[in-house]
Length: 151
Picture (cartoon, rainbow, N blue to C red):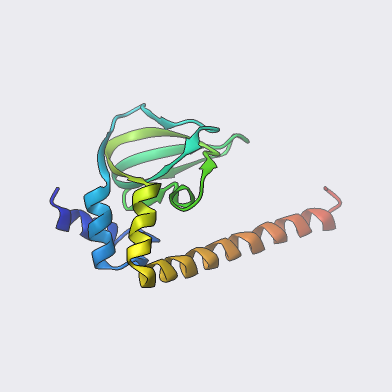
């Protein structure tokens, strides 16, 4: 896939869509194409996370330690937090439909953010909004448990 085509795909993936065209081109250039093979484990829970994955096609199942699962398909970003902070993976990721992805290394991503501060600010605002919504939802869940006497 040509860099321009890859950049176009990245511009459709939240939150990468906030960075701008030139930043997407740099990410496309720096990212490593990855074939997703059915049944392949992309990573295990507890592993160090130093990259994110832009899923271009196929599907990846996430297995949470508590038994929950979620499946991500095309035009989704897996491991977005690992793009900006050192951390461990909190889920196991297994390919459930063959396809392709881009492996985006944290170091390369942070360099792009440094070169495009306006895009970095837009990304920061999007992540703050998203994590704020998540925090409020978790608070409501905890408050509901307390009210029901289940804590």
